[in-house]
Length: 166
Image (tube, rainbow, N blue to C red; front, side, top):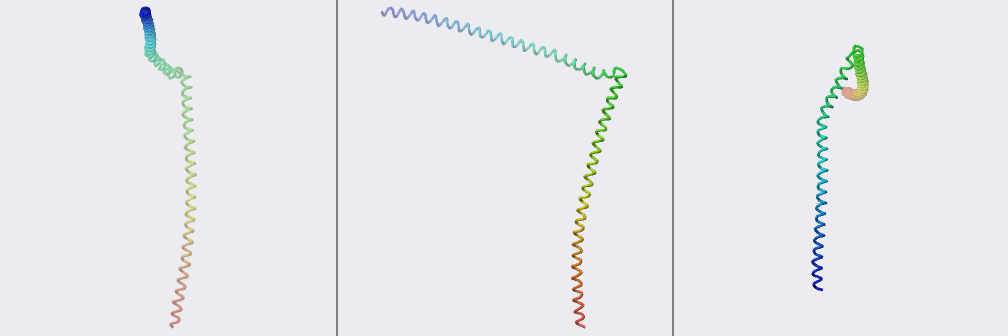
């Protein structure tokens, strides 16, 4: 029995070794395949990125030229015939006149606002001056009356004293 165990043990070790080797080989092949696919994807992505950069490098200047051409055409086109030029000038004149009228209206409303505010301020100041003038006048009148009464009383007192001495 001891012989069969040792012979089975070595057979089982050989089977395990073969199985482990096969698994390792499969794992290595799988890892290599994954690495190969990843490298292929990376290569494709880099190629696409490079292509996009190259296309941008070509498309941008072409777009700039086309934009400049369109703008130049927009500027020159209204001036290609006498009728179109006159129409363009009338449009400019209308815009300038409208801007001038708008500016004039703003100036008029600002002037009216300032005039109204000045009138209100003047009225308020005049009212305040009249109020203070009345206060001063009434105080002065009251003080004068009091002083006059006091002077008259003293004069009468002195007069009475002089009369009594005579």
